[in-house]
Each structure stands twice: as C-alpha cells, then as structure tokens.
Amino acid sequence: MDQGPMENAFAAAATLARGDLVGLPTETVYGLGADATNAEAVAKIFAAKGRPHFNPLISHVVSLEAAEALGVFSPLARKLAEAFWPGPLSLVVPRQPDCAVCDLACAGLDTIALRVPSHPLMQEVLRAFGKPVAAPSANVSGRPSPTTADHVLAEFGDKLTLVLDGGPCAVGLESAVVAVIGDQATLLRLGGLSRVELEAVAGPLLAPDASSKAAPASPGMVLRHYAPRAPVRLNGTSAGSGEVMIGFGPGFDGADFNLSAAGDLVEAAAHLFSMLRAADALNPSAIVIATIPETGLGEAIADRLRRAAER
Ligand code: AMP
Ligand code: MG
Image 1 (cartoon, rainbow, N blue to C red):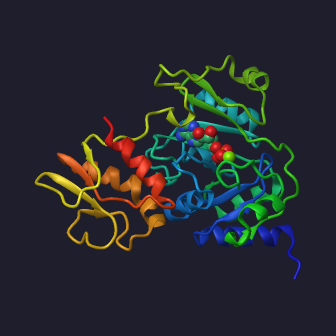
Image 2: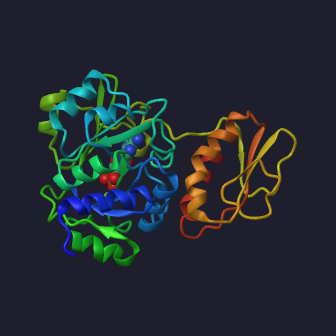
Image 3: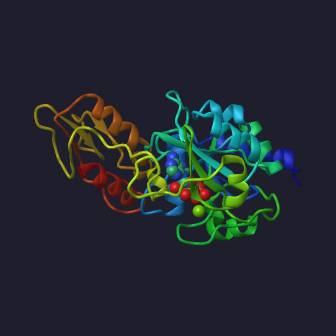
C-alpha cells in the first residue's frame, strides 16, 4: 500500500513513541530523530552515529509555546524566535527546572538547544508525536550531512525502521545556532541564516570567547558541563566509607547505582548523567565508578567520565 504523507507522519510518531529512531526531513538537513524525553532512545542516536563523545543535540518542537515549556526565553530570545521560527535557527537557552528533555540529549548541560523546523512533514510528525524530538544530522560521525532520504538510507540502511521522504532539503545547510542568556546573544554556528539576517533582529552578536564563561569558544561549553562536586574515582571496584559506588554490569549487587546491571552500553549511556547527579546529591566523599569497556558507546561514556574526574 502506498502511504500518503499524513499516514507516514503518524507512522513516524508511533516509531518515536516506541523509543526507536526515525530518519526525518527538515528544511536544513535530514535528522536522525528520537523521543527527546527518553534517554534510552537518545542513546541509540549516539550509538548509530558512532560519535566518540556526547555532544548536546537540538530538540525540535512544534511551536514557541512548546519550546518555552523546555527552555527559559528572555525577551531577546523570544524576539529571535518570533522573527525566525519556524526556520533554520536553533536557540540555546537555559533549561527550565522541570525540562522534560533528558539529560543525555543536553549532554548534561544546564542549557538546551531548541528549534521549530518549517518543513511541513516534520511539523506533522511533531504535532502527531506531541513531544520534543532530538535530532542531529542523520550521518555517521565525520561524514557530510544528508539532504535527501536516499542519503539517509545510504548512511544507516537497515539500522532504521523508517525514513520519511520529504524531498530534497530546501536549505541544505545546518541551522544557525545562537545562544541567548538574558540579553547576551552569542553566535555559536553559522548555518541556514547569515550573520546580517540575525543581527538585523538581535543587534551585534557576540563571538564565542575562550576566556568567558558566558560565551566560551566551544559551542558545547556555553554553560559548563555538569561536573560533580564530589571527587570522581575511575575504575573502582567498591566504595569505602562515605563514598558512593556506581557499578557497571553484573557483580555490583551492593552498589548504590548501576549504569546497567546487564552490561548494556546503550542503557549505561541513558543513565550516565542522571546517575552522576543522583550520586552527587548524596554528598559523598567520592564517587567511585566501575570500569567501562571502551567499545561502541563505551568510548563516549569513558570520555565523559574522564572529564568528570578532572578537577
Ligand atoms: P547538530 O544537531 O549536529 O546540528 O548540532 C547541534 C549543534 O548545536 C552543535 O553545534 C552543538 O554544539 C550545538 N548545541 C546544542 N545544544 C547546545 C547547548 N546546550 N549549548 C551549546 N551548544 C549547543
Ligand atoms: Mg551534524
């Protein structure tokens, strides 16, 4: 049976609701989409893309109203959203305290990247799904971004249950990324909008600056990556008195937390940021973490843990 675009949007929403990945058309590039509120689904994105570290993903929503439930919009952020949404602009704003998007999609940051895409089929998917969709470009790490459904199939083929064909992308470039904290707007990435277009609305945009915490050079670092207050000890096997243990795999029955009792790296990635926070909240003298095998997603998990252990 040949399905029309509407049925396809409902099929995509159902696939997302099951926690599976979908190839999705947007006006910028094709996205590899997952339910942004489901950390295990988001972990599948990182596994499929084969990234060696966790970077924050853009959460796609249907409207500015939906975005404001997730992020804190200053008057300047709202002005940019009203001028360019739906469209190729991603706004990085502070997360709402009750933000439904999982920690993994935000790479543990206290900020969130949000966008309302204009592609009609993507809008149908977002309306049918009713929740935010995390979607980085649908390419294997290090390869160019896909701008047709065939590109996505060539990248991921049978790893994806569903790729929605929305035709070739109209913009064909990633979205521009602007961080807006209060009345400070920082241009993090040029893309489908030019600096001139953005500055006509926002006024002069700050450049990322390595020496500034508000606008540092690396886009992933707008606010500092979540670092536990407690010292972190890697490759531990048990917790001493006052310490908290985060295990991995079988054999950690007595541990306070286990990233995955089954030793599943996708499950471990899904639990990583929330367990670090929960362990830290116990005010331990140290957080002891079991060895993580550095294969597949384990590489990104170990990279994040090494940075948590540096002080
Ligand atoms: P992509 O999804 O592949 O188009 O890339 C997302 C872009 O948005 C990357 O440049 C990220 O570093 C940036 N980004 C997403 N979330 C944040 C955030 N919370 N803070 C800073 N940059 C972000
Ligand atoms: Mg990309």
